[in-house]
Amino acid sequence: MTDTAVRIDGNTLRLPGGVAVRFVRTLRLPETGTHPLPPGLGDFPLRRVEDYADTVPEQWRARGGVMLPVYLREAMWLSFAGSSEPAALQVGVGKVCAVSGKPWSDRLARKPQNYLVIPRQPWLDGINSGKGTVRQFVAVPLGLGATVEGQVTGEEVWGGVQLQSFALNDAELAKWREQERARAAARPLPGGFAGAAMPMAAAAPGAPPAPAMARPGGGPRPAAAAMGLGVGGSMRQEVYQDDRPLTSWAESPSGRVFVHLVTPPEWRRITGEEPPPSPVDRAAYTRAGLPWFDYYDEEAQDLAPTDTLADVKPVGDWLGDDHEPWQQPTPGQVKPLGDAPGKAVADGEW
Image 1 (cartoon, one colour):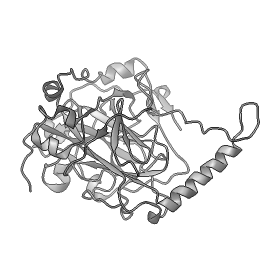
Image 2 (cartoon, helix red, strand yellow):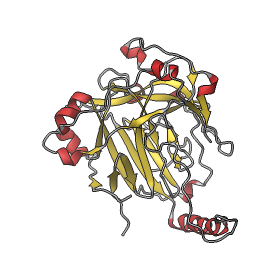
Image 3 (tube, rainbow, N blue to C red):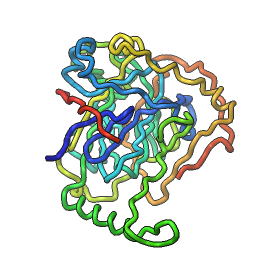
Image 4 (cartoon, rainbow, N blue to C red):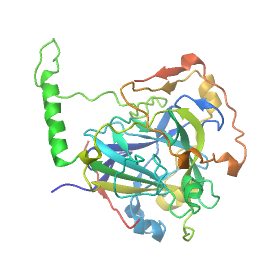
């Protein structure tokens, strides 16, 4: 029987089909200009909602999933390092597709494409908002209209992040596995011999944060103090077009999960744990000479943005100017980049 459960492994969400997702803390970009990829500054901790049934809001229990703590205006990116077999991954922000800007759907679509192709897409830092650029994910409370959800739909009902994975269909998956076996058999072993060497995982762009700067890696308001994602500054990042026919993918999702974003005071009340410290000062990071990143895949084709997402305004339009100082990184600081599962995460109605 196919396992359709989503599980937490440390701070990694593991969806069926080998999809691994980490939520990574990062420096918030200025809302003007286009910038290199900011660094990873450690993972957001993840907890299952059902483990705190007595303290989470009733609405969250009904939706199931997981939760993580995030500060007002804190930025994040999603790392897919550690993903194995090819998969299609839908990413929703308040049930608006972060790739196409269309409403959340249980089916994959191509015109416009409403999913990412894993593992070719190593990470996603924001919504697909321009040719070769994305606008950074930034946390804001629901109710101001600043979220992507609020700007696209005119309502703020859901908040959070939604993930849904699709595997290759049986025939395509069998073909891919056979090709992988052939590649593994032809791969040289140490000493120059070829044979059935075990596939070696590439260095994960979003590998665990040590050092911390390593990137590779109309409805009612919610009753809870919920958070959603708006957008911040623009950065150079491509969202890759799928080069497989749409018929290569399974028609139904293999797994899905609702990720609730919790304010630090709510996290403390719900879990009894201290949230991570507030984000690092970005000017101090740059002054210290620590790296920023640039990533480019010459064999992949960038996915054009839709007008819906290109028109989303940054959170500063609602919350006011960003007074945190900005110091542009020097060219030498921009670096080019080319376990056992835990308990299943309960899904719910959403």
